[in-house]
Length: 83
Image 1 (cartoon, rainbow, N blue to C red):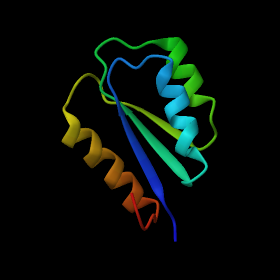
Image 2: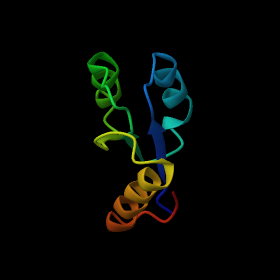
Image 3: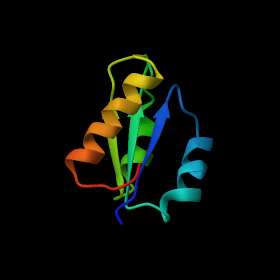
């Protein structure tokens, strides 16, 4: 069974890194969809440093459902059973 995860980011701070670490070992891949209007390069670099994370810039706040739909499409395309 292949399990993917998703986190929707909006102006994330350092705490998001610890949150990600807490569940990263339970999933095979994490789609991090960033809805932030202004990107924080230092946070993005830390997120991208994990080999199980796919960072997706959503070009601004498109809403929670749009971000979740992006992750769902990718999970389906990549053969994941659960998101």
